[in-house]
Length: 271
Image 1 (cartoon, helix red, strand yellow):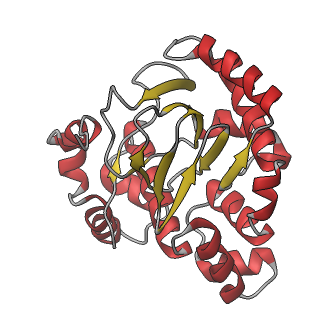
Image 2 (image 1 turned 180 degrees about the vertical axis):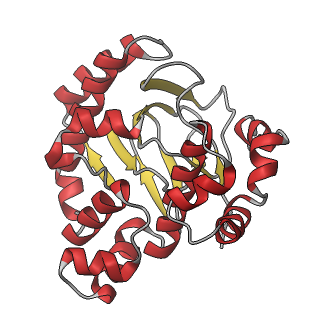
């Protein structure tokens, strides 16, 4: 399976929401990566092609894409004049902003109407790279998420209700396995697995493992010991956690948290 780095979206100590800008001439693309924060990218000018899990998506001006928490992505190719905004929130803050009906962030590929696009770009330009803008950044996230999900482009690629509900359950309880999820959703495991793979571009098993790892990293950051956090994150044992950690990130937990590997991952760029 292709490996992705863990690179948090939010700058260290900069709050619960943030808006970045990316300009192609500046460069500095990140390698394939994933993080706990859901992320939204809106192309303002030019075009971009992203690798998203096992697939790709191409965005032109006024188009946006949403990456749920844990979904790996990478900018593969772009026009020389590419300019885009990226918005990301802590998972709990995103759930608060979106409310119960939309709390589970799902994959979205949408296109904004011209007038909405102009308003959104003006708002984003006022917030970009500024700390202390959590509320307006959250409002921008909410508006973009709603517009993206209700656009004509999104309607043609709508996420299946089983995927939506599975993501919502896993965000609260990443310890659930496929059979337990299917029981909660009152359907067959094969149905959940099939729709999830189509919508997310990866298997439900792999996504669940990644969500457990993100939960594990959060618990250790919060002060839990490595072995205690493994059980709390939904792993059957520390050995199982260690195997999953190494398979996904190429190192063990001890190396990640203590030996500086995490910092090197965070600072890595493709070029």
